[in-house]
Image: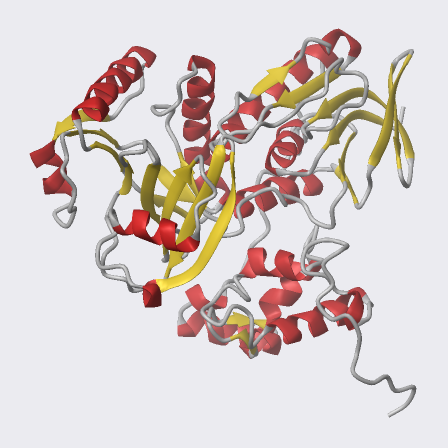
Length: 462
């Protein structure tokens, strides 16, 4: 057998599973079709960590609460950017008030700790600048905001350091059941394994059904410039007359997000009007970027109905996937441990490699690292103070960046006010040099996203 376990998909859940299984004496590989891992997280690299209150399904709620607790441990263990931020779900009319009372009672029955049902005056004490007609609200001290990409990269790098083999740019074409496991065929290789863990939506004629992700609407959101004075201290959720969810929260990077979850594909102007009902004093000049994506509120589950054959599949797509990923990975780990009778490694290394972020260092720390490597003193991205040394580290690390988007997510370069106008060409040049490619071969994030189509003029000699 080539491997004990093959993990299909290098998204957040796939990397979380790789990390959990790398604790055991198993031969593991992860297959990912894209250039980079964790390519399924939001572009703004900021996500709310939920506590299961807003979830209708009891199983999903447990996965969220369990994931919430695991993330609290991972934040300190992996030294992840994380912002503890309480949340307030606000009702503005009698219908919403009655709904929140039922949500609160349901949460109490589920055993969700650190929550309270507040009256309007209590909410104004927490958020004096709130300009809404508050009937009642659920206040939770369990929530926070995290950089999901940093979480996924930490999962992947630690799994790599503990022996997991990552097969990037490989597309799974077929899976066949054999006597003792499976034969997996990709566009580059053929593997055999004892178990397959499928974290992708693809069907390989083993599942017996074709999975589909039915979107529940759209998520439209503004990234607000740093320094905007109208931000709230807590994560704020509320509903409008159309039962659309409008919410706002800080990011770990220091910006603020204002968003609308809606069933309709609304325009920028419509979204701005809806968001302004919550975020007062917001002007177009305060907006850094406008993003839109499909919104999923589906049921996520671990399908182990074929565990006797050695096959596990993660099904469904949900907006709280970042919160549930650690709990899903832990459950899969326990299932694999029981199925393969594997043992924990005695030399498992749970410590991530260090990352040096120039903008967060003191002048003394900066001088020290520049004395070791002068490239840490060369600013490439002026907006976010990202140095050439940081970009080189992002490329040369295990599972290093191979795209401009990979550099952006790892370092913050190109994510400033100029949107990469001043640094994109510099990053393309560094990527081309470090990966031994032409500048015209460097892509934004996928094979079909080349940034430079051709040079103005080619020279054989200079």
